Length: 218
Image (cartoon, rainbow, N blue to C red; front, side, top):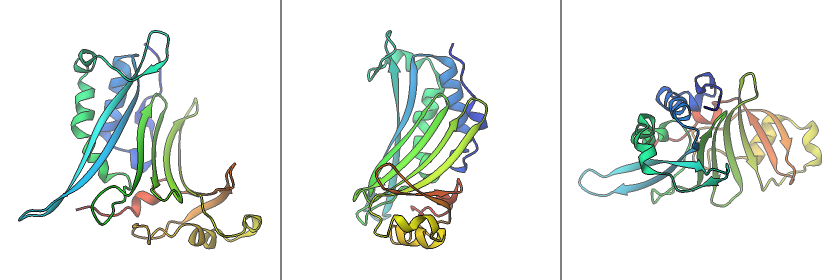
């Protein structure tokens, strides 16, 4: 069995979900054939006498073939033999409460969501449909410890990239990412600002900052 760091050491607040971390440990311990667990999300509004929002989540699994290449099909009998699989499938919808997922006024997801875990890594991304920004949470094991990070990547920054080096972090954050206009409960505080390989502006946040400001879905 392949050795891997226990997910119990993950520190990012968005991923500190006991059942999730325990299930990932149990799953990756049970088999070498599964190398990725991912989650899909959907939302819709039920309009009846008690109108309410239905938030769904489903788990999926990726395996590797005998040559070590990833492929989509997984033997259902293999999944049936691992209790952690059923826990991940059964409780996937609960992950809505831990990561920010924005909704349109028609109650559909207002962007593209990616949430997955591999041995030594768990990551969440949300990119708005306009592709003007993307948020990313990550916990990655560096060989000795789990390292948490959280970023907002802005693809349409209208300010001067040359002036970023000496600019005030708070003012750049306000100019680059209007979080309240996009549905968050407040404006995040960035620790520092960077520039990506394609001139995108990257706001580095304290892990857990955006989860603190995530919208309420009811």
